[in-house]
Image (cartoon, rainbow, N blue to C red; front, side, top):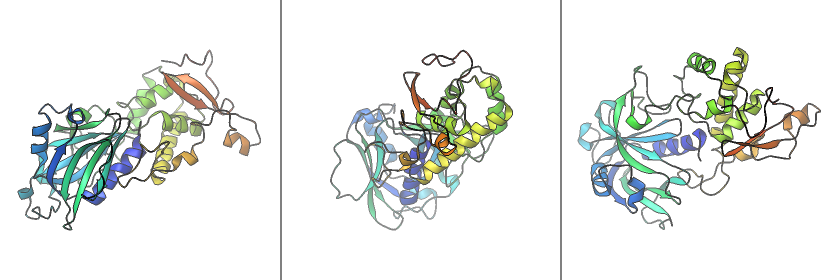
Length: 333
């Protein structure tokens, strides 16, 4: 599934190209893609039609569209100029990519994609006609309207957003901030580690603790920090806790710079382009290959793949030594 870098690439592309656009039409081609919207396909489409796409925000792996009425700002009319922050409505549109969701920007006359589920006709601020197309082969993702609620600390709720409002969808409120978020609380993260004996990789994958990290970037971060995935979180020293935070930030920042990690044609940006961070992966998917760090240091570490929570973990046994009593397949819970 897409992780923070892939989702941020999509979010920033939508914001860059479509912020301030007037939504002129909405067509739900497959009702399963709006199944989480209690209003149903027709009312979902009606609620969005005639609004302005004021902002595209993200927290962790979650993206949402902030909407405003065209008349809510003197500048927001037929040309779809972005409204002021105070003009944003009470609900946002959560865009969940799932395993295969794609949010694409297309010309209206472009050929229809095979797995097109939702199509929005837009008028951009410069007067151009565009379409936002939600394509989803496996239909695990979708869109739905969700009430916006205040962030308790009053800080900007989204990790990435142009308007920086202290509002986020109710369904996203339980999601923690990510390491790239300027309001991420590193001290609170360290305290959370001391309260659990779960393996550190389980903690990294817990989106309520630290969002945006999935299996790929967890393995890459742990390799950089020289930590085994099953090491109990409450046994980490202060420097080790700092190392995993630093490694997570570095890995995701580098992946974001490279456009994310694309192992197949499903993970693409709004223009249909794939990321290339897979070329820089140090452990994930490299079982049986030499550890690059060991190789540079004149050692003979070989990457191994081990079962973990119904998926896999990749590590170098020399760089990431197993905790005492560890047996592969029985990672600390």
